[in-house]
Length: 181
Ligand code: IMP
Ligand code: MG
Image (tube, rainbow, N blue to C red; front, side):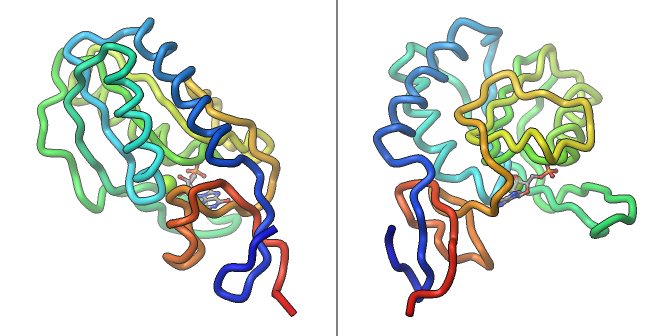
């Protein structure tokens, strides 16, 4: 347990486990479709995972191009939710293999939207890598092709993931369990 910003944070996956898993994911990705590979990090929560995974891709023998997209969901709770592009990629995806990288696959709405968008733009193949899979929260039939770890239904922080922009700097994935006395 660590105390950061007055909150107790329990480690769910530590830096060593994550680093090892990134190497495994990179070898799986290298064995998949990588024709003119374009890696697209879905900001913001994926920034550290994407940074580590893309370096692991190099170690696995790949030489992808790397891009960034910022997506945001609108609507909340039980009302129907949509996804919109806040900041788009600059690259043409036509005829290319695309790897979308995100932090967490939850309802699946964000990544379903992103995958569909890349196919509409003429991508040859679109695969998805996520650090964490919150399977019980799925509201679509989307599955990720590459999953780091299963994630219990807790709000997690660290390794890029935040609560109101905080805790992104933690080198591990943690759960906020309460206030420090
Ligand atoms: P969904 O799959 O469209 O529901 O969106 C999942 C997105 O919600 C992730 O990419 C995160 O940005 C965010 N998210 C979901 N659960 C958590 C969490 O536990 N911590 C931080 N962000 C989360
Ligand atoms: Mg996200």
